Image (cartoon, rainbow, N blue to C red; front, side, top):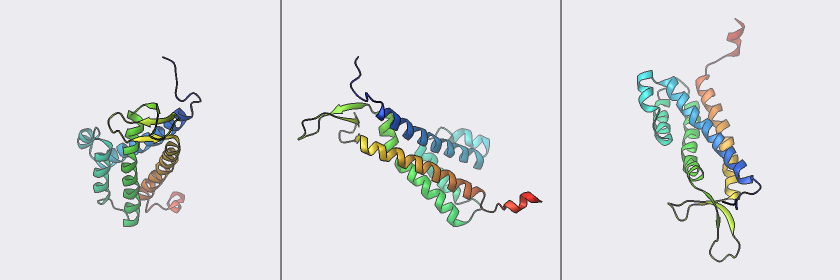
Length: 159
C-alpha cells in the first residue's frame, strides 16, 4: 500500500512527543500508587485505567502529611492529566487520514475517530497537545516532588 499521509514525518514526530510525555505521566501515577499503597493493594489497582488511578491518587493525596497548597497543586495537575487523557486516547487509537471537510475542495491530513464522527485532530491542535503534554509532565513531576519533599531541608545533609 502506498503511503499517502505524513510524507515528511511531522505528524509522527508530534504523536511521539505527545505519547512519550503522557507515558511519563502514566508512570508517575503507578510510581505514586506503589509508594503510597501496600504491595497487595497495589497489585490490585495497578491495572486500573488512567482516570481511575488519578481519582484514587487524588483521594489518597488528601491523606498525605503535606501542606494543603502542595496537595492542591499536585491534585490539580493530576486532574489536568486526566482531562488530557481524552485527547491521548483519540491520538493513540485513531488513524491519520486524508479528510475532505464540508465546503472545502482540498484534502487535509487529520487524526479522525472511527467511532466519534466529529472527533478530528488537525495538525495545529496536535502541536498544541504535544506542547501541553510536555509542560504538564514537568509540572506534574515538580508538584509530586514538592509534595514529597515539603519538609526537606538541604541543611540536614551537612550534619
